[in-house]
Image 1: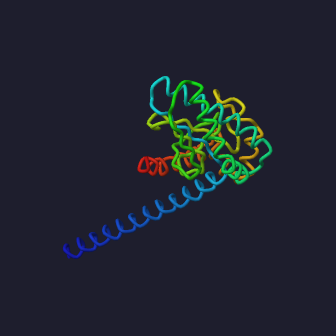
Image 2: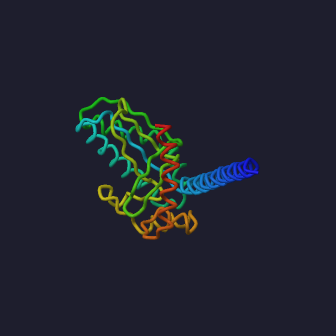
Image 3: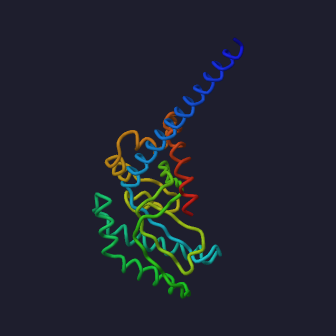
Length: 220
């Protein structure tokens, strides 16, 4: 009788752990599916700028910021009437050679002879904050400018919606840019990237960060 009870108890424990594993797998896959869907929607609504310095020296970092400022100034003029990410990307592609020329001019003006590589594509980004807007890590369409050996620290920004054209140094986000972001995201997705005290929203953003930062670390 004792052997039978022990067998029954073992069977129950075994079934319990099987159910627990299946439930955990279901929760994990559901969370991953949610993260991927939300991340894709957010990524589909923005076009970013990525400037990489030649090195981490003070001089090269300062040069990076000068290239950034001139590129943003030019892009702001080009895209001031754009209302969609697609329009901005088409403009960036059309004027890609201009970005190359601008960067080369800034570098030459400051006494350097670094080469410049300008690319438009899909790249991995870490979590970044722009004022009260936070974009989770993930793959985003972007204009990437690599200066020289491109071994220095990166600088990221958002070209559409224009999250940093008004004040590059402080990252103040204009209301018009927020409205553009809201137009391209549903309410929950916009709340996820906005500064909020809602515990549930914060948990979901942390969930996205957890999964996407793992992917970013693998791709870096």
